[in-house]
Amino acid sequence: MSGEIINRISQFLKLIRFKNLLFLLFLQISIFYLLLSSSNISSSHVWYGIIGLVIPTFLIAAFGNSVNDYFDYESDIINHKNANHSERFAAEKIKKASVRLGSLSLVSMAVSFLITNNIILLGFFISSILLLYYYSSKLKCIPILGNLVVSCLCVIALFLPIVYIMLIAEGVKLTGETRVFLSGFLFFVFLTTLIRELIKDLEDINGDRATGCKTLPVSIGESKTRNVLLGICLITALMLMSWAQYLGIFVNAYVMLFCVFPMILIGALIVRTSNYEKVSRYLKWLMFSSSLLIYIFHFSYNL
Image (cartoon, rainbow, N blue to C red; front, side, top):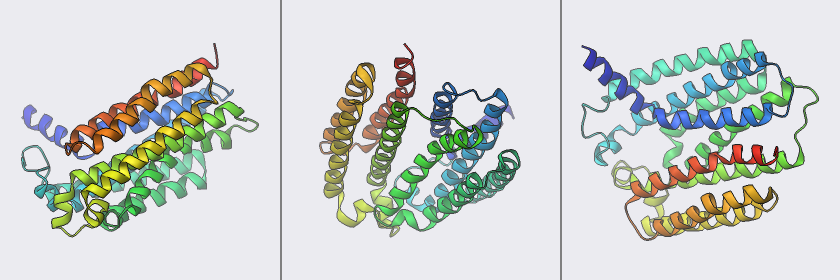
């Protein structure tokens, strides 16, 4: 019995992509940390922020991942992503899990509004859950548009701590360096998320083509999509080099070694291999190493 329970929990965690959710929450909390370190906000506001922002973000993102799996069920079978049914939910179970996660998301949104009394946050949460459903059912099969929607939602989720801090802490102003850092960092998150979404489309090209989902690789071909990705990687590397010049020697060195150089290598790898799972794995490591920039920036300016 205990083995069956563990197996069900494991299936559920895979369904909601638990590791990806933890990484998103890590980024949110890291930005919270950066902002709180330069303000005099009470600890109670920190807990309000966690309950009012982090929990709804987690549940809404989990809902988005599960409902996406439901609409992608046939495509995933073709792509051999759920060939082993002992490791993944069947379609009906995915549907039930999505309904429950959606219900929990609505409850968390209501609690968030009661705690923060902030219509901006509530509007974002409502828009997010609707967009994620519409993305899974319609937008993901429109070239580039679906990828841009996911990238924008990810950036806005990380922008919410900034909105929250500025609204509850009157008189708190970000320094010029912090504004430059956060602006560049969020744009970098947008670009890397866009790259990751396009790589996922390359991974899923066979299933998407068979089910009539016209993603960018299906619409313009695998080779041209690789060239598009290479271009985005190079633009990202150039943006990073320009941005890092304004952030001091420590941040600059870290960006060059752990962000720019790996991004160029990933771009080169994209056009040289069809092992997109390997490319995606390298990109995840790049995204993790770049997340530490928040702490590198904070400590370099407080030496």
